[in-house]
Image (cartoon, rainbow, N blue to C red; front, side, top):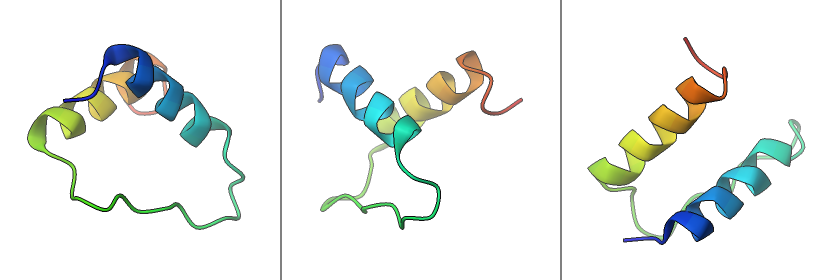
Length: 49
């Protein structure tokens, strides 16, 4: 599990990453909880509907 403070910092880095660069893939696949957290963050910040 990742601490909420680390999760928010990681999301901030990804949000500001240059659009032309390929995203770095995690060493381990994201677990269901991580995917849910990302989806909620994207919805709450207006990145998806």
